[in-house]
Image 1: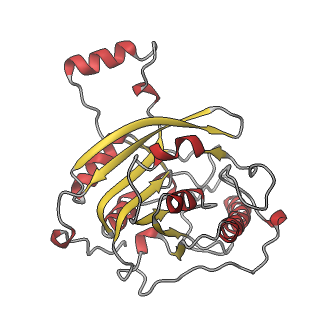
Image 2: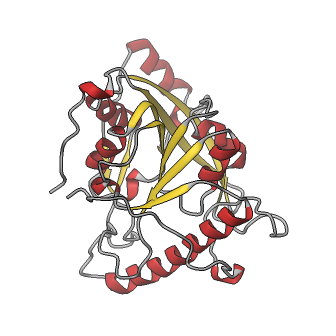
Length: 286
């Protein structure tokens, strides 16, 4: 059920120790020598992740900031940024976790939540160091309060894969976006201009064979409990069409992980074609 009011997050203290932070993004933070020791380096690829859109003087709604790199990069581009994320209390019941009776899933989740707490510390550490004005709403996206204001652009970067009901999540985001929404997920290597892809791409073009919209269920015995789904581009495009964003484009790009290896992703940019005041988004998740 949708929340009745907005819960704004705040730093746990005015002086967060650096050794109580964990970085998800490799980034430059004032006061830290060199780069943060993160998992992914999106710095060279950030324009593709943002759909190559102009963020100047735009209100941007970002789902799942983790340690905040996208927030701060959007602000550098002139955006007024609000993010949405879950609380990091170890007993947080809104966390979408895969329950696996053959694994100690409660222990695994508790360890994950401790890392999330440190990542939230890193977010607030960087927020202070960068003098950020971005705001953070604590809420499951599927329960986003109606009173959240309308934004011009929505950004969802590798988050839908972690949500048990991504269809409702996308609907709730779209209900607060006036212009465009940018969604990035893993995949797209087969669309690259490589020798290996030459023949399949030729046949797709010659016979104009369209992809079928597909979701794949990820949980299995060896998988971490935070991962639910993988999608292809067409699945996201079809959902966006249902929600009033019928004009879409896709770009294919990559960034680096902490080992310097490429991570291949695609980004769908959806443009609103049905005015928001003509869309009935009044749905509560069950």
